[in-house]
Image (cartoon, rainbow over all chains, first blue to last red; front, side, top):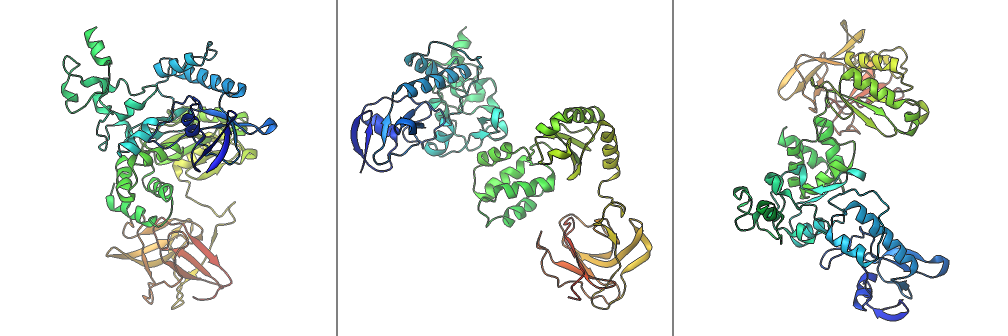
Length: 225
Length: 282
């Protein structure tokens, strides 16, 4: 067992637990976009930053990837943490302003300004879908490719992958929903998502073998309009 | 693309941990790019998922998923080369070839690429054509480089390059001279030996210049094939110098007139060669 102090509360937890798990267990909320139970921690979104250490030695770490240490002092909502978190949210909001998940988080954390140019990306590269596909669906159909500003994700060669079962898991976990509208190009479709609700949907034939997890369905709404 | 070639490449790196990049490099060396089918094959053989391999192939700039031309022209646009006029050089190449960086000419002769720093900043702007480096390139020099490339960069001269010089070779077994004065390669008497590979049998003439890779042969030798060399006089096989440190094919020993041994790799396309003036016969 390891004893640590989290927001002034002394707790004992098992070795190997992460700060995020401890905080969640003892009821200290830490926001996160790239963490999900059942998937390996990744530390991509940096929303879960917490402050560890004291005085001049204190530093910010991502709680989802940081295992607890003996005698550690953690603050999950110090001024420094809140400021960093708000900045991260503001940046995330600038890259994906249309994402409902990020909008809600930003609103909950009182991000009241938008100083950065809106990019209207459809992905925050959190890697949830990649891990979902690999670790839970055992498919390994999508992954990251490219580097730097060209980094993105999808299937190899951007064609439908033979290992993809169109389960829709990637869309289900996505906080920015990058794969929302692949219905326009069925040969590139990964999940089939919105394109396959019961009629009246779009042209249904190319999507006959797909399942849909979208509710409400974008395609259906487009069709109705 | 031949699947057994890919298989061979994968097999060569089977024992290496993290051999994926080495495999991809070998495939790229062979085909000048990474064909989609080759990547699928590598995924099957190594047991890795295709998406990981695709991720690695797209991560590194040196890997190309598009077919490249016969000649690869790389213009350095790193900081130092940039301020020394790299972009102007790149534009000049663009204009001469009629393509944008990253593209290949319609006749599949040239591919133009830019890269960021080769680490020889004092010599900038730098242009690399098929592994040959050109330093302090000016717009005037661009034309020269193009002409040189079209004429063949592999052509070597004794002038200016101290690593290249004529040698006279003889058979290590019967000591007969292998020089063929009637036949000249690179302006010097050629070295004539008998070669056997894949059931074909015929003469092969090597350049008499040490360091020159120019070879002429009776039958076309396919790339990567290991050739057995024989003395045309005593018909003994020229072998016994151990494996090539580069590709592990047998190395062929040839005696140098005046003492010493030249060793050349017997694999077509492998450029390994060594001159050992100290050593006597093998």
